[in-house]
Image (cartoon, rainbow over all chains, first blue to last red; front, side, top):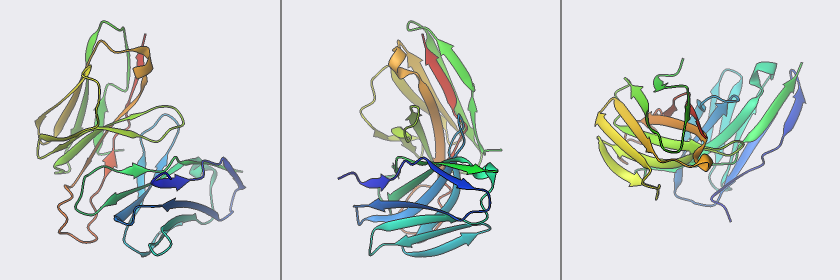
Length: 112
Length: 119
């Protein structure tokens, strides 16, 4: 079993839709959870980070962590064509190695 | 614009060439990283520097040689590469994970990358 599982998609939605992106993980030592957005041929851009369980909201983006289920989510409200990108979840243990463990990434297309 | 600056943005090199990739950050981060990313794959960690010392080498071939001259700069020296080394090379930086600051934003930030083609 991979440490982090993420459905690679592709996922295609109409403009204005609510998008739900998810990752599951197996290592209960993960404490910090991040979502990155990566446009084609660019570096990953940090969207959200969350520590332990709970929700965090930033504009149209909401990140959720459920440590009991080892499940994290990113919701995008009122999706825009500019949200079309690959979304990568990443996680790291607290106080351990600085090595991020990434999911495979989900390719999202928002159609006008 | 990203706060981690990588140069050059594109590089084409022959298998006998020697070249260097450069990375710079001015966020006061004391951990810096090199990642390699192939098409449609997530980034793969190569090296980690913590307080200017190499702390992680993910069994990377010796044709890749990292260097951290100071807390703001990170280089990756390339020599005798193979065509399969063609990829997007990403630099990143963050606060060091000391294990004492709960919930702190470590600011794990990536640069835009250098797209390397080995011919």
